[in-house]
Image (cartoon, rainbow, N blue to C red; front, side, top):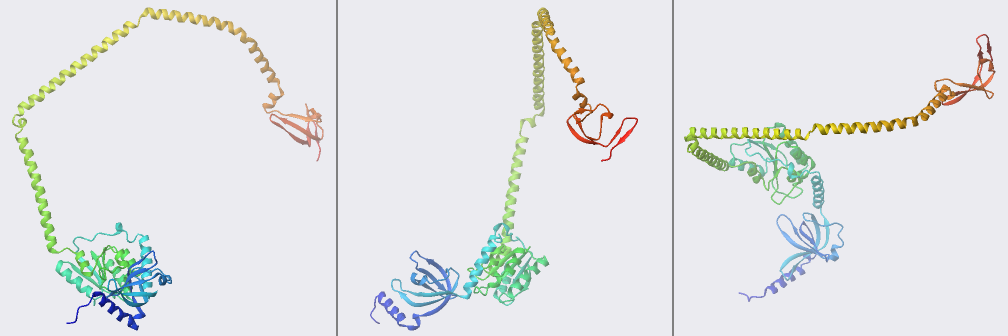
Amino acid sequence: MANPIQVSEVVRYVKRQLDDDPILQQLAVIGEISNFKRYASGHCYFTLKDESSRMKAVMFSRDARTLNFEPKDGMNVIVVARVTMYESTGDIQLYVELMRQDGIGILFERYEARKRELEAKGWFAAERKRPLPAFPERIGIITSPKGAALHDIATTLRRRAPHVAITFAPVAVQGDQSAPQVASAIRWMNERTDCDVLIVGRGGGSIEELWAFNEDVVVEAIHESRIPVISAVGHETDFTLADFVADVRAATPTAAAELATATIEAQRKDVERLTAQLTRSVTNQMSSIRERLGRATNSYGLKSPRFTLTQKRERFEQAEIRLEQGVTKQVTHAKHRLAQSRQQLDVRKLAQTLRRNEETHRQFDGRLKRIRPLERPTDRFAAQVGRLNAVSPLAVLARGYTLIEQDGTYVKDVKQLHDGLVTIRFRDGQAVAEVKERHDGETTSRTDV
């Protein structure tokens, strides 16, 4: 057995082996970013992984400044890096010098952008998601006929709910034809109208293998489905847009079958639990009714109804007496108030008041007679004004007559008129006219203009 050595010596030895290997000094590595974090110093620390393994990686600020995009978790990238060991922890790390997006990384960007759009439209909102039926009679399955997902779903359904019928729609779950086939199958299930719930899914895979369930045609078909949809795409860590828009997301196809049905044993337990609750409720109600009936049966009033009737009659008679006394008291009080009012109404006082009013009337009448002579000159002046207004030319004009003036003289008869212009005065203005023809009752004179 070799002599033992320190851990640090082992770490330094392995580090030298890594650093001395020219292949490990500049590698192009493809993988998916996770746990990405950029510190204030500008250094970037993250994990680069694939389906089987993962490695820690660091990109120092001097190299990170060359990036033309912002790295994010889930993004597939190609890095140029060297492999070495960090002595303090003994971890093998990638020291990244260059990084660029892989084609899959572009898919991830498309996925994130479309996810933000659908979320803004409210397609992921919890209030629009429908509850799954408690006891479905038929379940629709949309998946590949060759994959393990169909086997897992069917096996789970036969074990948990063998009475539930199954309608299967075989589709491709990967490739160019996958998305149209899945969308068509969802619509076909809705046209049948006999399925209570749909399970749409497949097994795990890379982002490009699951991409059909991010396509708009599949997402829209799930959104428009009248039947509740369970999305079971990939493994528990895989998420697609179909998962977000579906009514329920299952981590795996097996979990989808479990969510869609309740086991016979679980249903039996539910029935037993509900039966026990109903029994307790009925028992409690019966006990309450028996207790109330016992109190009523043992009450004194029920045992001696004649005594109870006598008590009621006595109370009625007492109430009748109180009512009669109250009415009598009110009538007596009203009579007393009427007598007081009559005493206050003294006839002699009324006579004295009448005499005082007559005297006051005579005084005012005398004053009025002294004032009336003063009004007569005013009345005479008003009469004169009225007579003047009656003979005023303005008053005549107000009745519809007009005045005709020619050469500064008012025309009194037709013989005064001669050819030329005349002014016709009305109540509210005047007009100018031209004489063309005159009639004096005997002759006619005409002048052409």
